[in-house]
Image (tube, rainbow, N blue to C red):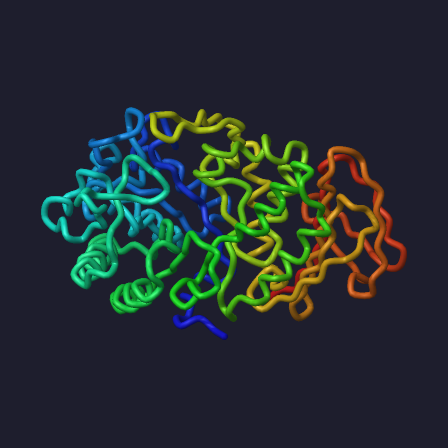
Length: 423
């Protein structure tokens, strides 16, 4: 099985940085965010994913500012974020640095006072009384009906507007599983005809790789959430990790320790993972897939950001984890073992709370050792595949591994060893 659409060349081995424009700065504007783009480029960010920048509905709005995902227009930019010229400038800056920009696309629902509720009321699902209705009991949005051919045409026209007008590089599709896969196939075909794009789906359904390059690695990440709550063992997560082999060739999973939903609803990575927060970031950047970094994780931001009201990340002169992420992202770029078609094996570590795995491709290797427990751990492994000479990613120290490799790790400690050959 393979994906129906080839991934864009720059999509292989990339990474994604999610931008919450409203909360990124005190100003909450595109212009203010642009000042951070050179820093993110230096950190090694490949793709900027902008959360919705469209206007937000007023009717049934939650909080003062409302949900980013309750749009009143599909083609306008919310004046609170800036102007069309500001967005053009952001795209040009990113492209000049070799970065790409994808935007959030909310195809399942709109806000109650979206332009279409007056212009195209037949596009919406209604209850028996003829009232607009929505999913999951969300009070501020109403569902679109994809059985209506004209809706599909208008939706695709709106998506193409952003490609043709602003030269965006792709879409992150919100609640993708609630929209029929055949619509996404049609939308991708038409949008990619304008310009080859990168497509990320917020879902974990294998069939959706017919239209999407990347889907969420929820099952594994939720498994880790349960592990840190003592509801699951690492041994029980391993089959979930290996199950991703069922996905089509050329498709990948999005791995993360935070995003806008996680941060606001479930807590920061420090709340969830405690002393293992950095180790889990290492996992998301070294396990096969595409790593996601959320706004402020590199600071690090250790608090939940408000979802329906104004908030801001308190940027300091020193971005403490900038070099940490830069080091990991650079390794992904240079070492073929962390790129497409690499193989990975999980090694027995003889400790229930440590995870050891080896990624390989051609002559390149990356060996990752993570102590995810809240206490010190002693582990050992003896596998011919790991024998060789390595460089410690974070210290530069040279290390040789042969038989009976033993390590004593502090709580949350990690080690990344690599053998990288020049391209």
